[in-house]
Image 1 (cartoon, helix red, strand yellow):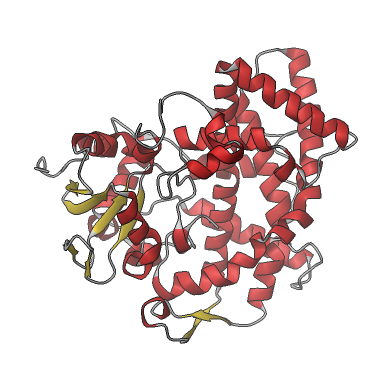
Image 2 (cartoon, rainbow, N blue to C red):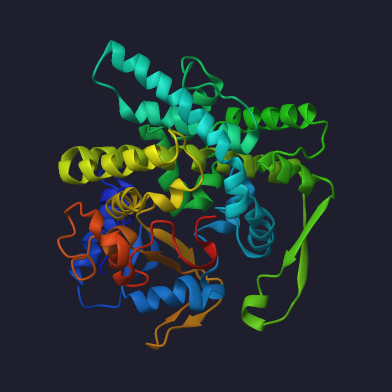
Length: 423
């Protein structure tokens, strides 16, 4: 596509006028039969991949060549960006292997009682607030609930945001991380498109107070546990296990290409630990709260689906003596279908970004050079009538029962796909 000067083909997004998913969607719809489209993200050449078979190559089949996110080589510039989400290469591979065990189904099951405890507090808060008004601001409540859950499950601390949000340091940190100001928007876009300018001028993505807060939080929890893993099996226990040695070991990223079994080591220092702490806190509460809020919004507009969810949850509660346990994950299939449909309409990340780490030639004979950006248009795929008939309609049945097996691979990716899928 012919680009506009400086702004390229993403002018609406770069000028803070629209969501990046909408900017890419305009390009996606202009070329309905193209497997991919060449565009400019500002001044940066970018390949927008439309075809699910080619997306499979990028995300999974030849993942090694696309294993980096955009501008990953700048992630060392700030402590907060040295986390699993932003990093790349051997560093990403080793961190991924060492952090994944925390999220096994067994570990999740062991932590569920903590979520159940937070749910009881949430129930009391709802009772108190509905007694005062029948109109509630759901997003604020859900953010406080998910923040309490992630604080308890990951860090072993009572954030107490449900009961006491005013002036709460965790609420303050959450607001700082996700501040939606014009200046933050300009900084985020400048960093994403022109990182050499952003860091060359000495800018930082986030205020230093965030790093300082989580560094202090980690130290406090470490001291409370005597710098030894407890029996909680939570994020802090995992971090303390990593801290026991100065290095962690894992597979080299090049093994994906060569088939070798080379090992690499990564130094475990305070910056690495604080960076993971921040990303798990941020990703743990905000995305869950937003998706829950949007699910409630869609159910409010769809009384038939709302009634069905209500009946399914009531039936579950009766079977289990008014208690929640880990079985709810598998025993509430229609509710899960509603959440899946919400994530189709409102994916957490509307455009997945990758960067070519080594020259690569697609089966179509298109060659992309090292450093080229690749965008996967998740928002557009999720709303493409070819894959989801009547895509603007909220229809949970798409993901209920056998119907969910009819969804074409690499057209529904609310958590990404392949080795870099959400942990």
